[in-house]
Image 1: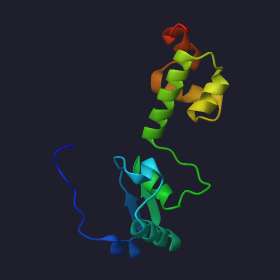
Image 2: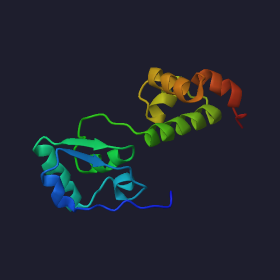
Image 3: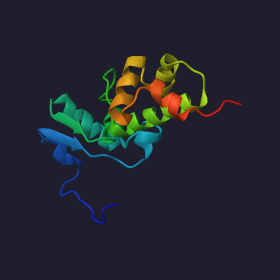
Image 4: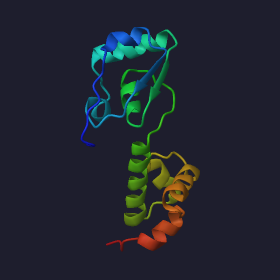
Length: 139
């Protein structure tokens, strides 16, 4: 924590007239752990969405937006999610003989191309180069 709090001036009722709704990042809780959200928050977000308000999330706030059902069949990502997937891929590259395609799918990237792009952006190396450098001996 940064040592300060931001407290809202209004309750959920303000969403009924907001043109833009910003859902801040969250630190754990039901939206991230089991995909649920307080029904009143969900209803307020869905009502804002239904009247065409812009819904914006910051980082892990995407989990709350998803829990409200507003991301159904729409892709979304967060830095947290990319970090989690990258860490999972690193572990698989270090500890298994899985091919890059399989590592990509198991880590949640979907394709080897997406994994390669993320590794290059985050680590500055390809998955194959990472494996050669950090591979643990298999027992």
